[in-house]
Length: 395
Image (cartoon, rainbow, N blue to C red; front, side, top):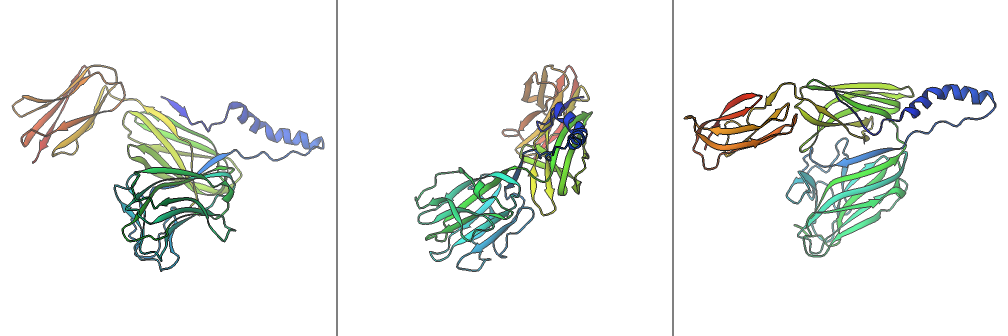
């Protein structure tokens, strides 16, 4: 059994001080002194829009979705024109992204995002961007606070006639912290049809004192499962916690645990992730308020040990063309040989030869190029035993 804690866990002295605080308060008040309230700890609150979960073709005049609430706007034409979209393109940093297109020199199109940075003391806006066919168009990145009538331009891109490739940028927006801080991407200045600006991984990270104070988050391996447990010191408008697990492509949502709303009492929460593969696993919490505001908390890591001497996952896809993959793991370091055999028992391909790390899943690729269609056998042999599976190559 292995227990790993995130760095947010407080030192023992801090926890002892919390237990002694009521007694200290009583003694100080009795002596006629005034004791100031204990300040909440500094935390990080993150808004991040990857646009991967939303399709928007720009024809209905609204880009609102929760919690990633963007709004389309035009200074000289109605929305719903299709010039602001969420698209899947090689110009995106990954997956889908936000795209602004020009129309003609008299029309400006924009996408606006409203954020609640209440309680923050510092904030940074960062994003990836890329331009396509930019000859005369310019795109401005802007910000304003709730009490400002005009926008402040943080950066202007375009009018260089080329594609510099995927770029990244960040801006300090601490001066614009408010309950309704707004950021905007706007294409303007002689933008024509076919001139595109792409924005991806738009993130605003604020630091300060925020409504939910997480005091501990830990992960404990229990066989093939992991028990996650966390505690809060106080909560304000807490709808709950989204439990996420890191995957090769980002973060997967495992479940949701309801919060306690608003409370000054310490709270405990738990979630069980079941039937995990052996190896390293990383988890995090995404705390969500009733208004959709969310905060990403620090990660915890845990190692799940192999429960048997040899573990193997089936090849996928099966049937396959031209490639398939499967994974295996061993409990102790021993030489492993994996081969591909035809129905006559002839070895037609070496798939793996070596001594893998214990308790770590290994991925093996089956390459069907140069092989005729038919049934084959994947055979894995080691001191831990022998395992085999039939696979079918279809052309």
